Amino acid sequence: MLEAIGECDRLGRGRFLEEYGFDPARRYSLHYNGVFYDSKAVVGVAYRSVAGRPLSAREFSGGRQTVGRLLTRLGFEVIHDEPLPPLQRLIAQLQALRVDSTADGPARHQPITLLWALGRAAHRKPRLVPWNAAHSELRGLLREYGQPRSRPRPEFPIIALAHTELWEMHGHTGDIPAAHGEPLGWMEEHDPHSGLSPWVYELTVSSEEARGEAVAEIGRRFFGGTVPRALLHEVGLRPVRANRLTRQDVGDREVYQRLCRSVEDAESRGDHDRTSRTTSERPVRSASAVEAVLLRSLGRCENPVCAGQPDDVTDRGKPLLEVDHIEDRASWGRDHPSQMIALCPNCHAIKTRGRTRDQLRELLLAEARSRHTAWESPARS
Image 1 (spheres, helix red, strand yellow):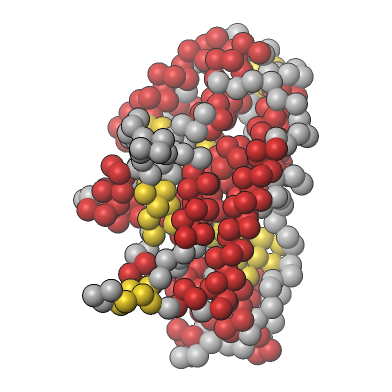
Image 2 (spheres, helix red, strand yellow; image 1 turned 90 degrees about the vertical axis):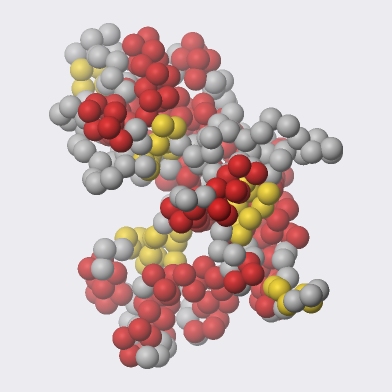
């Protein structure tokens, strides 16, 4: 299955379906690493490892009792019907958020932690934050704005959120503990990096509307109507009128999608299979793909655990960023924004030569896919 998913990533969805004769999934999608795949097509191609050849579309059914049951048994997530647009999905997750009740009303530790993370996203700060840094920043917020009789202990909301689709955690070994009990020792031992899931981060970075809707929903559920202005100010947010996209939001998103269509049209023509010849042959590279990734980055390193990119800029005033293929283009890695990443020179060096480069490449691939999905999807429901 993973080989078939990887082949779909390399070829692109349209070319993958055309190559093996499958139609797009109508009702059931395979959700893996933040990306939705055509479940029947991926299973048909994966069957090649069993029988030596892929199954054709007419040889088997792609319904819940066949493909759906098989994928679930293998541990994959199967989504029924079309996935929710990102904004609807975000609001649904906030509405489903489970928090403890206190004598003063709903506990506010998780909502405050989410507002803190949304504020970081609004200012394009690194998505993932080490525990020691998060603890020092959150403790004062929880003490000031939490329910009067709640203890300001950031480990509880972070652990609880890590068990939802809104949040993720990296840099630890073993399972994440339950939110109840005493998780402080585990957090201090591992010092994990955590923060918003990539799709939430990219959605709230690229859409002022999404930030406004998220803040409004948090205010309705946990603050008796609206989030206090003082709290919004302290986390770096400002009151945003819901249901409004800025001209810049729409323009950047449309440009990004147009560039991606240009890249995919070139793929379908076979342009990306061509080589250029200098002293040796090498695959051609798409200028549109590079432009799209730089636009998506908004001038910041896309490594979610970047330790801080240089403050200096180029002679033209541009950020010091290098667009890199996560799977080396020289080895025919796909020349598409979903598998490319904008990195500062420090992170680029780690990805290329660092001892932790294998782990970082895996993280960057998931990051690129999720950012691409967020920018490709319409922000409005």
